[in-house]
Amino acid sequence: MTRVYIALGANLASPKAQLDQACIALKALASDGRVAVSPYYASAAMGDVPQPDYLNAVACFNTSLDPIALLDALQAIEQQQGRVRHIRWGARSLDLDLLLYGAQQIDLPRLTVPHYGMKQRSFVLVPLHDLAPELVLPCGTAVASLIDDTLLAEVQQLSPDH
Image (cartoon, rainbow, N blue to C red):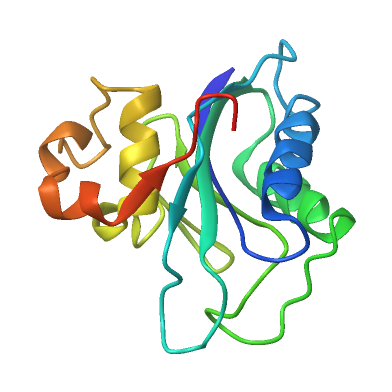
């Protein structure tokens, strides 16, 4: 059993409904059917591609799936919810990124864990901190130490009932 953290993001096709549906789908990947989910946050899109703002969250659960099987399952959920990969950094109906797989560091052609950009992304760090305020990354950095006022200003929490 391994504790995993998954970033969720959507900015097309009813983003809130996309995240809600993804959270339900993630329960099938959890060993005990339980998934903890952070509050939802709105944030501006990254990159130079004009697109709507995103809704983001982080989910965590225990799984018996190995890292590649989990990646495949996450990509299957994205596809079931209409994800089409056209443009890097482009708009999407659903994006599920494997942030952490226990304390493992993984460097494979299809998968890098911890997720390569997570330390700089407010829309990942803030909800991750909501779920696990004492979490220490595999490199030894505490998530709490990465969050400052600038990062907090980049995201806006939705009401608790999302």
